[in-house]
Length: 165
Image 1 (cartoon, rainbow, N blue to C red):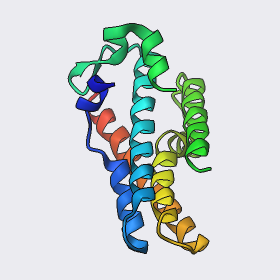
Image 2: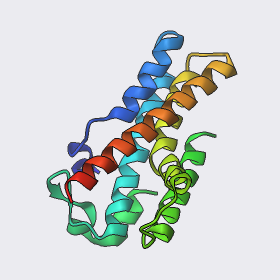
Image 3: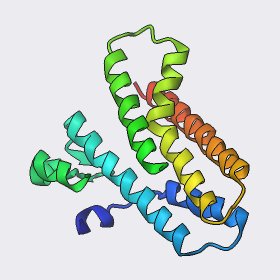
């Protein structure tokens, strides 16, 4: 676990938790727990991506499965966050199913990125909002904001990858 924690990324998702919470009031212990959970969940999904993709490197360092094999990598990664995990898994499965189809329909692409990337950013915003807001409409608005930001991020990332082919 120390190896994983030392290889931290940009930590955007926990920042979304904190920023969403701050819109509703003072950041509190619940907010920090939500931010930690979101970052751990994101890290677990990266470990699992490396297993599925058989990647030997992550962020310029050896991946977990490169150092300790897939069994350890899978063991490391074991409301809203649970729904996010389900959506990410479904998005990944849909992407695998459609990967051979070079004529991907726009709505299928959006469904993939909504599940794979946007669901966790949406959950991060909703979790932060839940820690300080008492208005379900505002929490839902922040969840939707996170979903849109997550989709925009993935579109940008895909365009960047496409340009580097």
